[in-house]
Image (cartoon, rainbow, N blue to C red; front, side):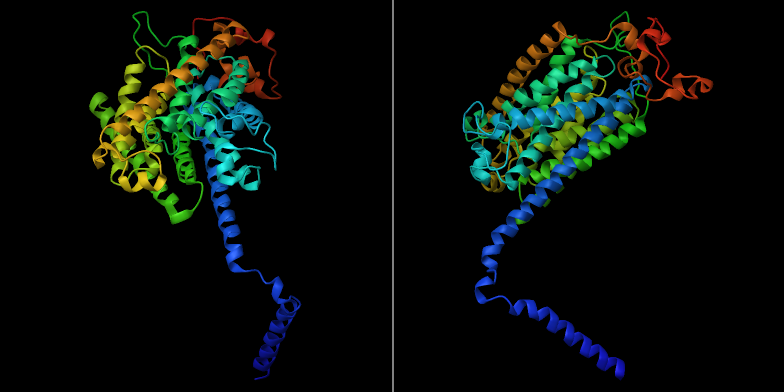
Length: 490
């Protein structure tokens, strides 16, 4: 009985203590819930955008694992340096120039406001329309989220160049790509530029063309100037398989990319209104799943094998294909779109390999599947979602005719021509100045030791007795730097 009384007394005392501060405020200091609601909504939207930003950033780890897995052991370590350096250079270029060209100002071709992005400075353009003319913390969320798209597009470029590109070539191209090339296409597709003037607007919810086709097209330009890896093609011109050294790492990379895509597409709603982001995430997952199943069936029918690389690239192709339609199509269409992407990537890899050495299949997974995803909007966009997003018309299968499909095709063509021309010029200038490709001796030795002075897997290349106190030898004294006709084991 005494404990019960004591407990009641303590509870009443606690309530009294909590009530005292409230009594100190007058009626005028009480926050009106209606005034607080817009602030809370804005903060919730920003929280979702930043969460999406983190998911898309994590895709850099996915690209690293995917490319390392597809590389031979002698080139495994350089993938980490490549990802870190390219991401950092792109971040600085985007802050200084890229964001302004992409989203500042209302020009048809490019933006002209928001250079060297700073708090409380004018941004204009789409950013100004969304968040006010002067940059705030909310604008900063948009700034960093959109940068992650730029970084993904740049990461796509390098998959085709594995195992023979000079590390120094990354620096100037990353500056030009993140500062000019990608921002131009982003302005056209996302920032109210050229694509908004085609028909009733081009539909590309999260970037099948703007991000993925742009990266793959730049990759093609670099690949044409770089050439194939040594030994990729035999004397008769037939392609020779050069297997990657670690398929588990490749698979982990695919799964990380899949996870990151939920932020990539889902956070492109730029808010939580109507819980639309949940629909987009679900559609994204269905597209990826369709890509995996279709790629598995296709490669089995063609080669009677369940090729791990093809199955993984089926997931990537399905995700790329559903990226543009993710905000425009109903659930039933998503696995169909992804499945077509899965078929395209298998057939595309096998066809492209006959002439071009693309170690990770980026030209197919991001290029061909990106084209298909962009065109798919012209077929599958529902009238409900075309009206909700407010861009373009319903697709052919919803009675919209061929007009939207024509707009989508025009966007694909403009993206390819502009990106290829600018990228080819940039890569050509790099080739004529600092050089684009390592020499044969360095390629034989592997880029880990040739470009970075260390092995990614030293125990595979250095006798155990010599590993004690191991220090990287100088380039001049490295026996492996001597040209040889035999490939270094991986």
